[in-house]
Length: 406
Length: 225
Image (tube, rainbow over all chains, first blue to last red; front, side, top):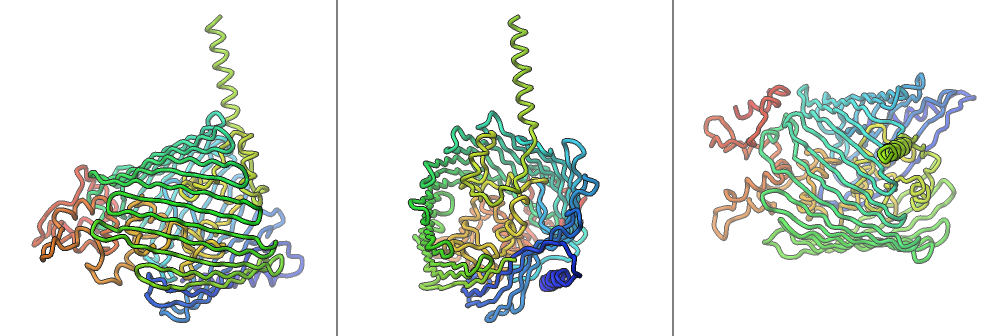
């Protein structure tokens, strides 16, 4: 299915480029040809080498008024070593018509849809009704698309999803939405969710936000989040947040009838930007898993740019509590040698203990990368990475990429 | 006079506040190429908190998940899907790719080993990008019993397991984990079923709304009843 979709995308593009003179459409996008090799240890414990072609394009101004556009994104790949062979994914391919009677936006085709109550990739339609007052409406529905780990798609081809939303529109300092999202699995309703989202700017420096999902099947809140962002100066951002979730399963799964615990977390976080060269951030999260178990997660980091072409990012985080602990650093250094040439490198170092009966284990990742812009619309880049951990004493992976923008 | 002054002040403040709150949102398409650091100049002047800070990956859901969001003014859907659905056309030099798929920074170093711990940090996070079938695709390749799940470990050196005392609490805290290896719950149903031969131990929560499930599907209840 995925490969057929990618073929459709390529066919569509070739038809449009072969049209008669006088064609006014603007075609832009990127073609990215990538050769990758890695030993993932996930889909197969053997080296995979693959050549992929990504294509992302937008065709705008198809009609005189500039209201009709087409957007597409997909990839097709050939795995040379493992069993996955020829594979592909069509991420989206939809036509969009904006401003029908200045009130309706319409999208038809495969697309990513988002509501406070749920999100999905669908083969279907989304209709937005706007300019009818301070409230706008969205209606969407179509076949529910799930991608498989090794390419292609999962699930029943007849699975569908639909949603309805009403939301405030145009207000600079206030966003609010209520929505309903439903999914069907082989004809049965598998998810039935109400969603709400609210964000409001108070007094210039305080933003309050909240969102929630209410599961109509278990009659409980699947997710609740509420918090504040406080920015007393342009350099300082403080975030305080409460979040809780209650696991929800498809009604068609036997797990939907089991008792579960509510997960809760509180987040405190601060970020300070000294100037264009230095910014720092840090925070703590308290996680509660229920029945007396919990964990603390600490995180600090900095982004440095001591001289214009040099960027350094370092982040440390530590988790300690229920089941185990992790300590680790992620670091990246980027350097612009010239306007057209960039190099990068980094080290990740993690020490973790998976449970009380294992000792400390160490995982390291080293990488080097470079990019050279051959022309304004062409670039070649490469990245090589070595992972050293309990499973591999050496695990080299890498990619070589040629990007062409049009 | 005092009361009148107070009422006028409150009305004036309210009018000013409503005028601010109902001010029109600025289209952002023309600012799409700007550096994030430059956004602050305008945002602070307008009294709107900058939302693309270093916490963006964790916090963007509130902004991006709502209908009518303005993400599309600067980003194509590819920007979202490279993370959420495994693309790779936008991967920059600092970003790793897992074969053909872009890997978010949260999937650090040896994620295969540490993902059981990471999946405890807000279990919903996994499901924002992966369907449950994604977990099972991988877990089904490994021999059962080869994972370090506490309730599945031997109790001391003998043949008994920590099962009885631990499995129910572990399951309630993160039931998705059970589903990764037992997608149909076959192991659970040996005890948690009303059918003949099972131990008939109810798995339902105290305020179980079974009618809401049976109204939507007749498949699930009949597994045990």
